[in-house]
Image (spheres, rainbow, N blue to C red):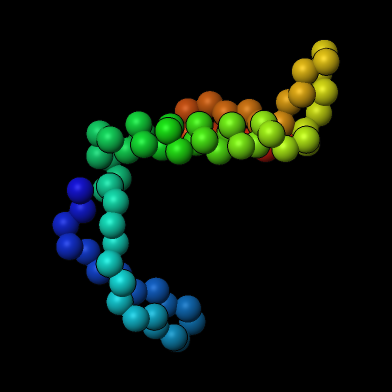
Length: 72
């Protein structure tokens, strides 16, 4: 897990107030597992929406491999 990290965002010359960062650091062993679980939910939700293209009587609305996703 992250250490106590605080960040600030600058847009042009305006700074936001400081805020805490939570979650996993890049390279954490749990990161790909959690990413896959979250992405699986997104893809399941997309399948419900009537969009995409028909190929051989199959509805295709998303392509996913590793950390890449294409929405059609």
